[in-house]
Length: 192
Image (cartoon, rainbow, N blue to C red; front, side, top):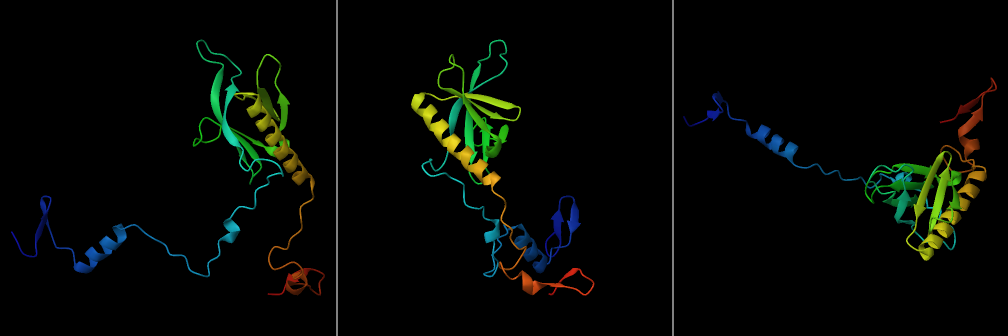
C-alpha cells in the first residue's frame, strides 16, 4: 500500500507531519548552551592555591603504602598515589591517579614522622586515628616528600590559626551603611 499510509510494524499509522519530524530532529541532536555575555561565573572558580615559598608547585606521585595486616600470600606493600590538594588543603591517598581517594586528611590536622629504622625511606602521615605508612624509592625522594609536605602543613596550620576576614554578604566593603538602616523599633532593616 503506498500513499499517505505507512506501515509501522504490524499496524498502519498515519504519516508524521513535517513539523513534528523537524521537532524530533531538533530534540535528538546534542544540546549546546551558549553563555550570555553578561553571565559571570567567576565566583565558581576556586581561590588561589596555598603553596609555600620554596615548595614545588604540585605535590603528587606514587609511593609504596604498608598494609597494617598481612594476609596469607599477600604482599605487605602496595603502590598508592598521593595527591596534595592545595586549593582545599587536603592529602588524598588513592589506588591510582584517576580513582576516587580512599583516605582524605586535612593538612591543618596532619603531622609527619619518620618511620622506625628497619623501614628504609619510610614516613608516617598521621591525622586523628589515621596512620598511613608510606615509603619513597630513595633518600632524595623521601627528602622531597618530607620537606614539601611539612611546608604545606605549616602553611595550612598558620592559615587555620588566623581569624577569618569579615566581609559583607554583598556589595563592596564600606557600603554596609547604605543598605542597612536602623528602624524606629531598634531592629536593623535592609533599604533596598
